[in-house]
Image (cartoon, rainbow, N blue to C red; front, side, top):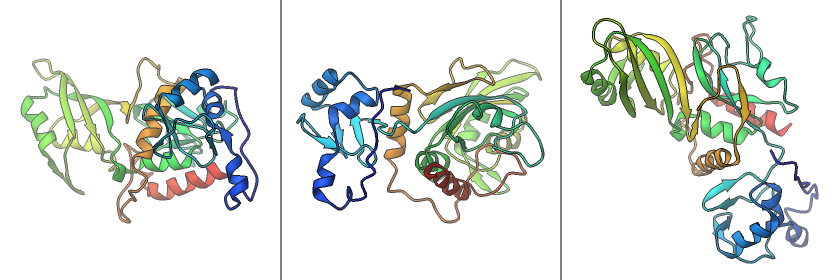
Length: 301
């Protein structure tokens, strides 16, 4: 993250007093502080019509904004102006539960978050036996959008399964199957490898559902129990070559893509009875709607 920071206004009149609100920070300075470009290049971005503030194109260099309330985008990609927010990608290892403090004493996420000054929390969960991409952040609003299935954020998994997977089985996953808690279908599915005989196959499954252990249950329902499961993609983010147990900060481009996703769904609100889960532990079936509210509360403290 850039060290070029600016201070947020603590003026209580900023929201009601037009003169106070008119102060703000010059847009090119805000863009430079956010690490978008130098101030001179930011001025060129503005005058060329590539910058939007609250959805409207801004071309005048005198425009001032409030980083704590205005939304800015460059080339239609959102920019995070709040430099106090942190966004970390973790390749969660097998055997670690997606909790900041596991009440049963199992390995949890604290070993990955203790190195950061900010109080981070996980966006959604992966069960203890599933490895892969998990986001850690102190941005509660973004976490709410990304974790709740009503917002339709896609997740892609690579599964090693028992037996030879056929094209007909892939079609069945995409057409839909019936589980004990209702019908479900993959948004996309494909065979990676399916050797002859009774060995193991590799399949890729993409879906936006957040139901409990859904990938494992879907594959078991079509006769191919999961041996190993990895989440490779979460929304626009890809795990890439990040090794198991390693963490890294999101790049500015990745963060912009993630913010864009979260800002495209602010008007949607989750259904009151919508179940929220990722591929989580059976003993962690509490509603993530409460988690998202807690996340936002923690982020504001």
